[in-house]
Length: 228
Picture 1 (spheres, one colour):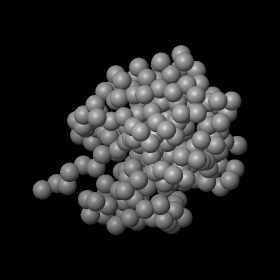
Picture 2 (cartoon, one colour):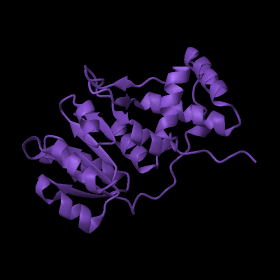
Picture 3 (cartoon, helix red, strand yellow):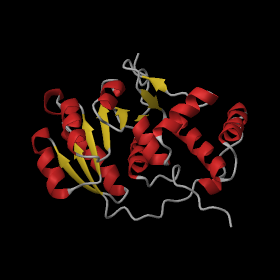
């Protein structure tokens, strides 16, 4: 069963999580096996699919280690934190993103003009430059000419060509890919090279947060400056 079935939760590949948190993928796998605190869901092919909550938990572990704890102790602190969910995240951790987004270009490939307008509106509201394609035929040329920092693609584009497009792009480029689809196909998206998946209809705040995650500008995922 697809881990995204029955809800609109986004999922992230292990490669995306490793890049976002600057934690090597082998380390993530080792922590999972050794401490069993952050255990992502699995697609039918066995690939790890992390939820946003699990990314946050790993971020917390990383920051405890940066503060001087050993990995085992950091995971022990996480376990205590999860047992007491009433303890909220310190407001100081949720810093406002101060990086200007105006220089960041996003390519949005969407089969539905209405959905494209919806997504483009929220991206531009956040200050991103956004280009829209309603057909997959021009993607490679646009990626070459404009070099956007992120690709958002509806997997049903051009009669369901999105997965093939993701594979072709991943063979030639390391650009972050956010796949979206009305079907629960997160495992197939990750297998095809997508870094994250969201099930449509998109929830605006989750959509923008996922974009920020993949671009490295999320307030949740930014590394706090070390204490003097």
